[in-house]
Image 1: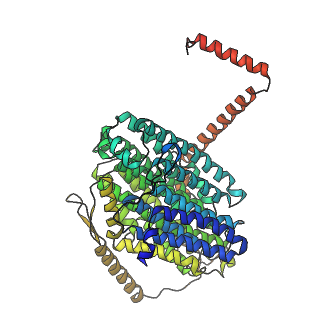
Image 2 (image 1 turned 90 degrees about the horizontal axis):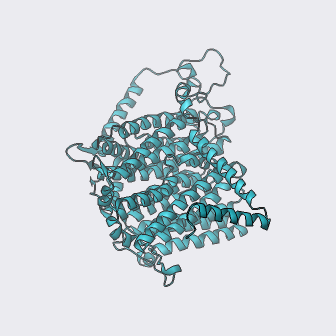
Image 3 (image 1 turned 180 degrees about the horizontal axis):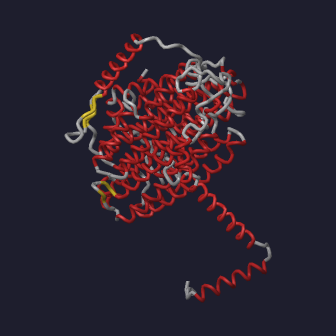
Length: 632
């Protein structure tokens, strides 16, 4: 079988299969919805399997067309870094398509929905497999357009969020294009292999400007402050079956871009030439600081949300802030923690958005205050979301603990007295908003209208169980993902982290973390607690009511529906509300209004009267003469 598949383990094959599959899936939907869904699942899962197999290859694969515009060569390649991100993207995309099939109908235009999902999957793989900046930019633009169109499929409610996403993404793309043009003008090549050999010798100011221009584009996709304003409306209003890909896969292209250009192309020595702070580059420190600030700001917003999708949207921004913090720090521990958390984020955020889709489908509402008591009615959904929340909050026995531990250690190791506390504050806040989901949706009082709620079909629950299982596996054996990440660090020229299957070694200063030992201790503690529960005096069973009664048997207002999600963290909201009034959104709105006003003024200049245009030319010439520029 491997001999038959071997020719397909090339990036051009994988991308082409998805693009062809997108067309076939769309037109198959004209014949039969079942055929369309089958095509979408087969193409996505098959390519995800090919990506998985391609990681065992020791050689890079290239694709160079014989002719390309202006003599450019398009290069696609597989290396340790690209394969790591491709594995995340393909896994999330394929299983989300399987998950979507379980709902039957996802949007009013399901043919376009499945076709665009395959197109987006192919474009995202194209970005990470690109070996030159032109291919990178082309696939980046296809990815942005496909994700924009998928967001608009949610209908009228998503129009504003989709438009904001497209406008800010376009600005980011122009920024990348400027950086790409500067690089080509200076070095005469766009191939990553060639740039890696020459960019290290460039002057620091040139590197700072080009990395900043590229970084703006990547920061938009990573929802890094101050460019995160598009993410909450886009994530929350996108179709429920697409948001897992939006947050779990597409958002990783920002961290990928930073990692590729900072360490894979420019390199640590060249970054250090731009200035250092406590052993890391100034550029990296700014990225890490912005990441930690993003984590805190988004966490505070998440705590105040009653809309489950908007809560998870802010949560996603916060967790991406952690990823950028680790990548910015740039040490062996920091990069490992950042990439490990990127993987964990892809898994637990996909699971949570999948669970949110199930809850919205079941209850008919996105408000947590309209839910409650669903834990016994939907045990699989409850279990998978519980494990994902444990990972998000960094609780042991899940992969999220290991990645956050590495990030904290990386910040502490460099004595970053601002970044480390911000990361801890964001982590505490993550537990607060995570608990809100558990308490509001699964515990407390069960509304009468939800008495018949139950877990959905296996097509929906199996992907969720798979991802939850991965989180537990990575919590017990962190060496599995960290072993792959160690090879990525070696490829990037960063000292690789020392790991084994169950342990992570950080040296004499920080010792080691043995996940299997931690798992054993926690399991024994749980068994002791379970034994005490059975030995202790039996409690009196009461109705399923809210914790407004603090566990007491309600004697009055028995028929009153009390939901703990109402004003869940009101005291905290009163403290932070004055500082979280969408100030950045107002700044962008003011900029947009000013731009519109200027554009309207310019439009009025074009009157269509030739005489007016003659006057304009005369005024322009007069200004040039007065400025002494006539010689031009």
